Image (tube, rainbow, N blue to C red; front, side, top):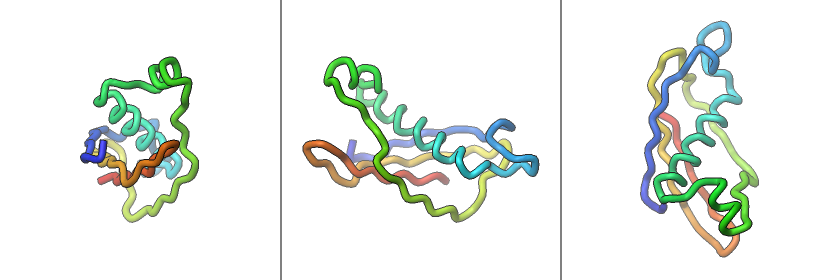
Length: 97
């Protein structure tokens, strides 16, 4: 999973505030969806990891830098890639464009 994984999504009305701008917390949902789809692309799921390995994938910390807002009906791409892996964790970068 060191390779780039790309997940495309569309901004829906429910993702935005009254001005049509994506509500800041919804970017975290977009990132979670992309991580889940990246896992699926490797033949796994959160449920499979839990059932087969008795483990959970959790976000320990996150750092977000907002550069430009997304708007209603924008098509976005989330690029995800693993930066490093240890025995018990991995560090992932994700970029929304």
